[in-house]
Image (tube, rainbow, N blue to C red; front, side):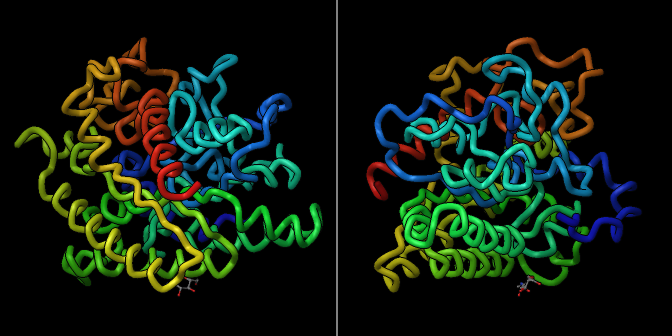
Amino acid sequence: MASPAGHRRATVLRQAAALLLALLSCCCCFRGSGARSASSSPASPKVPAVIVFGDSTVDTGNNNGIGTILKSDFPPYGRDMAGGPRPTGRFCNGRLPPDFISEALGLPPLVPAYLDPAYGIQDFARGVCFASAGTGLDNKTAGVLSVIPLWKEVEYFKEYQRRLRRHAGRAAARRIVSDALYVVSIGTNDFLENYFLLVTGRFAEFTAAEFEDFLVAEAERFLAEIHRLGARRVTFAGLSPIGCLPLERTLNSLRGGCIEEYNQVARDYNDKLLAMFRRLTASRPSLKVAYINVYQNMLDLITNPSTLGLENVEEGCCATGKVEMSYLCNDKNPLTCEDAGKYFFWDSFHPTEKVNQFFAKKTLDLCYEQLL
Ligand SMILES: *[C@@H]1O[C@H](CO)[C@@H](O)[C@H](O)[C@H]1NC(C)=O
């Protein structure tokens, strides 16, 4: 598992590390041991497996072993995991939405990262995560922090299918792939780590509207490809109000509040994404795509935080909560909050476990309505 483009950007990385670190998407991860749920299948699960693509919002630990500075496999990440603190590479104090979704469907409570050597194909047959924190729909986004590009996630998916056929046989492998629930969450980094950060040249190349079109076309290509490879039931997340992430609020501190320009771009992109899903599925009857309205889900919580018992929806729990994520969110910082359950954000970019659980519930409700 060679790291993609390991050293090319080392210089840029060093200069921009502090800022870039704050710019990725979110997740929380666990480790192999004990993650296997020996007892989680009293009834037969609703789907054979949960298969995950995307960025840090759903990466359960693939970045741990690759050459990037975008990591979270150290404390206080994972500090509120059931059974005791366990940093796994999830950008969270606990679990991520795919973990909760897996558990609710009668599958293991943690979806293992494909690159985690603690797991094997017998585990991945019931759920696997190909996501990589910091990646995006645009190939150039993954290059910014040397993480796994989306096309490479798909390459891993193909390799996974070969392994699965050897492990379970052709027919069973085909059934797992076609009946699995696919969870896709990606796009935030294309704007916050790439386009608006001006590091890749996309800003000069495209207007925001053109870049939205470009990303939606990439999303369509991706969906067509995984459908060709056997996927049938897909949940695909839209963008959140990306201008309201703590880091973006910090960048906006002169004016205060969310960066409305970014939120507008997120809404426009989401509209185009949804229209694409309708087009694509109309021409492919065997493909179902459920659009997850993360924008609305997050806005509901930010405007009514008390429904979840939240007291702070503007800053992360970790450190000052204004800029820290990855290595800047570490054990040395005395400011880290005591009770992450009162916070929407765990670090300056990523939700707490409590919020992830809420998002998972919303996704599951939609799955039962539209996919299962
Ligand atoms: C992204 O990179 C992959 C692999 O090199 C390539 O197949 C694909 O065409 C690229 N996408 C774009 C839009 O250039």
